[in-house]
Length: 277
Ligand SMILES: C[S@@+](CC[C@H](N)C(=O)[O-])C[C@H]1O[C@@H](n2cnc3c(N)ncnc32)[C@H](O)[C@@H]1O
Image (cartoon, rainbow, N blue to C red; front, top):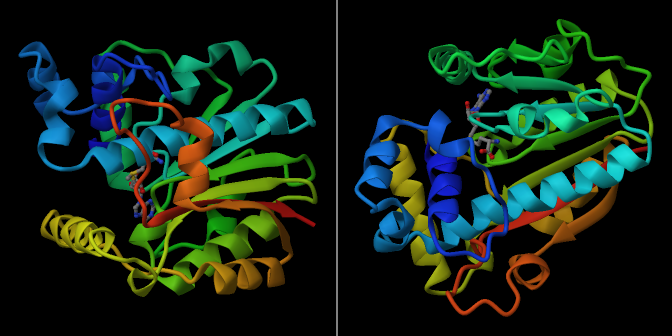
């Protein structure tokens, strides 16, 4: 709900827009809709000192969908969204559904809310969109994917945004092993991951600690952080090659150059893309 609230807040502001998600406000919680009705949504996250989180959420979404379209042009016909949350791709890009089957994997609690909300809004789900409930801490991603209609011998694009931060190192690796086993060479995985706090200077470390403690208070503790070089090596050892691993500076240069409003990504998170070999 927070991520969708952020996408809605971005669109409620004056722009320029890094990512446009007109469904976010409809899908997120009443709290954000009430703020929007009062004209307070655009400035809400900035008022909490969370502008870098806004930049992160809209920047990663844009980066991911740019990469997806590139992958689609190269022949991928399946899009797997791991930890989809209130991602609206399946509603926003109905134009692509004749070329793309979409699989939304998510925690059962989150998915239940989303399906109920879609039902409440009277939205019919396209038959090319598949929902698979999974708790990555309890079930192997390969087993979860095996319950779906994902074709293992056809290239797929996996997006895994805003989730790695909530998982232990072992659960991240197990999920990637499952993805590797469930798909074929040429498939890609796009993910964002938090770097170890010792690699951050101040005030970025203070922001990291404050986000970590507010997440824990919400009952969604953030878990492992990663050293980029080591993480890349471990993922490549599982049978992937790294396509890109953007620092927050590279992320900023790609999507936030020449802005006057200070919007930019969260300094602790990198955007990495891997291809199955
Ligand atoms: C911050 S949201 C990101 C949602 C979406 N990917 C986006 O970028 O807007 C985190 C997502 O991770 C999912 N998640 C967290 N822990 C999980 C777990 N153990 N198993 C499955 N999904 C999980 C949540 O249900 C939620 O949808």
